[in-house]
Length: 393
Image 1 (cartoon, rainbow, N blue to C red):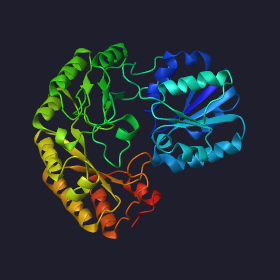
Image 2: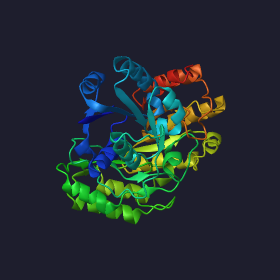
Image 3: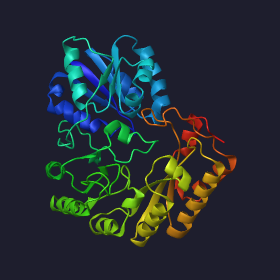
């Protein structure tokens, strides 16, 4: 039987869930031996002894580009001819030609459920295929939440697409500016059929906007959803926390009342990105500093720890913007007990900033971020990111 090996990592493990669902639903798992591997040692074993065709699939973000390159080079030395290398996910979708040049044989652009199934079917019969395969957007997310034949679980994906189109973020440009939501009935049926209902987490770019149209939030629909989850037997609901977040303008007293009433998380992940009005306008966030301050204050008043994302090194970022942002961060920490999740800007393919140059970090900024980290109020992979894009101050 031909073998399909999926390379699973800490950063891409959620990406495989909808693909496994699609493979299962279309009967691919009856024709292919599908193997999930979590480390390089298991990967090498998984590639040995399989019948042709032998396919190794990667899904990765730009953040993991260097690690994928290094591993791919080792795999190509060990298996120079036997393995067909394919890639999809955010980075390959944004830079398909560059991904081919890394050594992949085929690259999938966009949503790959239907495209990947067709690719495997045609591969079995030897039908020629283009090296770059572009998928169409799935019109409805009305498919199962988890595969039945694999013990592979993840937070439930609720939404694809985002109305805001921030210049640094891939979500709108990969999945569209019109959000598509997973139907409530499908989510609840998945939960009722599951064995473990102790808790649920979700994936959505803005937890305040699930079931809403565009930028208008429908909190009545959201409350009905929470009630449905409880009626389905869920013990604990985690909402607006990783791997989801909430836009600042979505953090309102009515929203917080719902989360406090029905959910169990004690923190909220809020996308702030900058403390400079000028920078927020430049990156197209669609909100200002006051909305962030208000979100942190209200979150604290309702008993939540605000966990705010900030990005440093934006293209064209000036020293005055950084000082404004650091002063704002210290205000949020001091007044509202906020925690900070720090990032460094990485130009992502397929976005308006894909060719933009990150601004090097100032020495004083590196020291201040380090101080906050040592105080236990700041986390994130900002140091690794800064080194990888060459902006370490």
